[in-house]
Length: 189
Image (tube, rainbow, N blue to C red; front, side, top):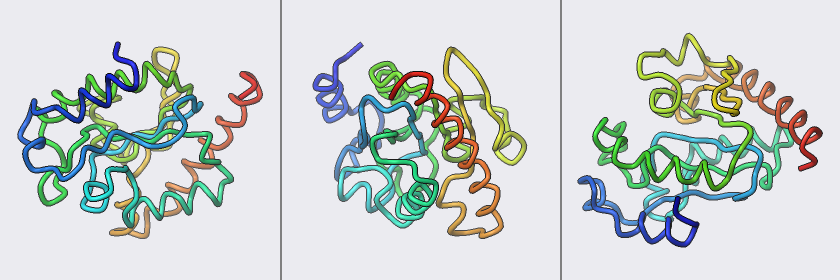
C-alpha cells in the first residue's frame, strides 16, 4: 500500500491507459483523509479536469447543496472517482480504463478506512458492488460488505438531466446522514 505522497506521485505519473494522454490534471480526491464516509463517482468532468479536484462542476455544486441541507459536514467525507483522468467528452470510463485505475481507488479506501461508502451513480456501483446490478433496482439499499456500509444512489449529474430523481436521491442521502450519525456516535468521530 502506498502512502498519500506515494499515491499522488503514482497517479500523477500514470500512463496505464489512454486517459493519461488527454487529461489536463489528475483528479485524485478531496476532503478529509480520516473521514468516516467516502463518496465515489465515475470520473472527472471538464471543470474537474481543469481544477484537479472532483465534484467542482454543476453536479458537484448540486451535491454540495444536498450535503449542506442534510448537515453533512466537509470533515465527514472524502470524495473520489473510479478513474482519476477525464474520459473524452465526459463519457463513462471503459472497462479497461477503470480496471487500470481501480488499484489507486482501493489504495485510497485502505488509507481512509471509511465506515460508509456512497456509490454515486451506475458506474461507481458497477465497479464497487456488482457489474450486473441496476442502479434503479438497488439504489437506496444498504449493502454491508467487508466491514463497509455501502449505499448506491444516483449520480448528481443524473438529477440535472432528470428532476424525478431528486426525491429518491434525497431519501437515499437521508439514510446516509442517519447512518453517519450512528457511526460517529459509536466511534467517537
